Amino acid sequence: MDVVKQKKKANGLLSPNTLLGLGATVLLVALVFWANESASSVSVQRGDILIDNVKRGDLKVIIEGYGSLKSARQQLITTFSRATVKEIVLKPGAAVQANSIIVQLENPELQQQLDSAKRDLSQAGANLRQLKLNQQREKLNESSTLAQISADFESASLKEVAEKKLEKQGIVSTLTYQQTRLHTQQLGKRINILKQRMFQLGLVHKEAINIGQERVLQQEGLLNISQARLDKLTVRAGFDGVLQRLSVELGQSLSPGQEVALIGSVTDLIALIRVPQSQAQQIMIGQTTIIDTRRDKIVGVVSRIDPIVANNTVEIEIALPKNLPASARPMLSVDGTITADTLTNVKYIQRPANVKDNSEISIYRVNPDSKDAQLISLKLGRQAGRYIEIKQGAAVNDQLIVSDLSNLKTTTTTLAIDY
Image 1 (cartoon, rainbow, N blue to C red):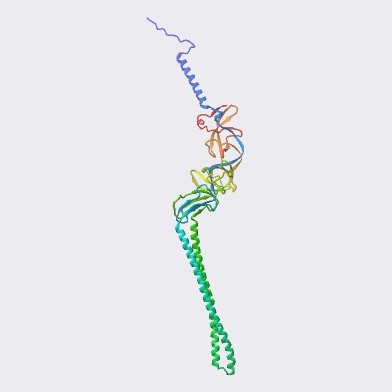
Image 2: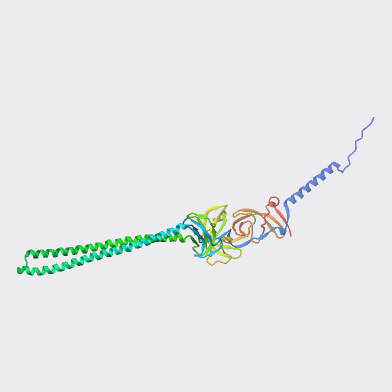
């Protein structure tokens, strides 16, 4: 009878399967630890990041914009009547004075109208002179009649005085005396009537002359209008400046009111700059502005804020001083910085990339001792140009990484900085 013998286990020894399981567990723990370390710490080169120290002090709230210089005075020249462009004297960009000729137009009908107005004025003047001659003749006739009747009245008066004495003596009959007396009275009445007639005639003559003079004035006005319309065929600038736009071509037929040219001032300029809509509410009339022409900086003042929003920007008009540098000229592209406010005794840093006013962000703070950076939360205030206010989350002299590291913030809270 066979007896099966069982092997005895070695005391104090582990089986190969157990050893294999323990080794796998250790390896797994090591991998997890390494993964955690890798996820929580990423290295960056010092030269690839921008670090700024938190400062404290007064901070000017600066709003930046862009735009161009414009003429404060502009004059649009249009045609006064139908005409044809005969000659173009000046082209856009030319400096002009008030009497500078820009374009010469042509319209033969206006010359004919002027000649006709001159003839009508001459005729009206001749009629007025003829009227005065006729009135003078009437006055002479009336004066002659008055003189004759006055002489007859004096003669009749003398006769009446003589016959009155004779009538008392019985030499002249009473009837004859009464007839002489009546004749004298009638002559006196005729003199009074004639004087009244001459007075009224003078009034009539005066009114007739006034009417004649008004006709002359009307013809003079028509002549001046015709002359002005003819003169306007010679298109002049109107004031000192620059020819900014010429809207006609040689030989072109123009209708009344059609644009010919645009004249703008050279020394009297304004700046029109566009600023972000989100910052426009901080701008007020009278705020100081610096206009940068790339060569010079000009101090101006906000004079107007356009109420219309276009492309998320608002147009701001800046009044500039009279004495401008040579680099300032119309249509020049410029940059503008408006000082909207001054924040007193605040903490601030350079504005990190892609941040907004009054927001809360995550940012890396550098530890000078360990040469690494920890992710912290930062509460921001108002923006001031390149800088932004810190309301909470950092102390003065803290070093913060202001570069755009948004791709790392979601993966690691610690940065190792390689100097």
